[in-house]
Amino acid sequence: MTDVIWPLDLRPTRQAFYIRTNTVRFESPLTGQVQIQERDGARWVAQVSLTRNAADSRRMDALLAALHGPVGRIYMPDFRRLAAKGSLAGDPQLVSGTGTTLTLSGFTPNVPGVLLAGDMIQTSPGRAHMVVQNVNADADGNASVPIAPRLREAVTTGDLITTNCRVLMRLQDDDQASNPTDNRLHSAFELQLSEVLPE
Image (cartoon, rainbow, N blue to C red; front, side, top):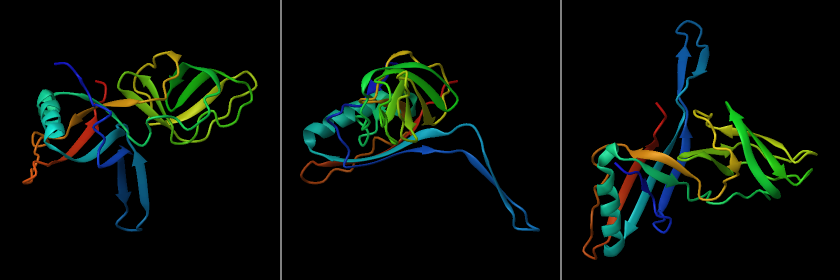
């Protein structure tokens, strides 16, 4: 089955797009002390609301039908972060990455704010990561970039991609294509999606 790309002109009325962590909470019944442990499996989650006219509703129906419920996969953007706000001064390149850190090169040396907290970086097709603090280029034009969620597969080295970053996701269940329609033929869609993690 071919993966689907969410069209940028089908902008949601409302969208939640966030990293759902995977934690376990232990509370002692004797002392009340609480321990929190983070487990692997943090992933992007999206909740999308749209109300569309008849023409766009037909496009949405077709897009959702092509997914075959949660079987299909879709490349989903975060519409709040379609472009980085950092200066990206120079010719930035993605060199490598491990854990929660990316190594970049090619920035103009000693420039502050080449990336800003909240910017998105595409590390490979369908894998996007959020910059979690402001980043400055060092004297050699290099930068170490803290990201979330952690890397789960090798990065695609080369030109740094910070525009229209997309996450590979799937619908939560078989009823996501439900679309109540009013007498003006405006249809409402409420979608819930989660990131497809590598096996």
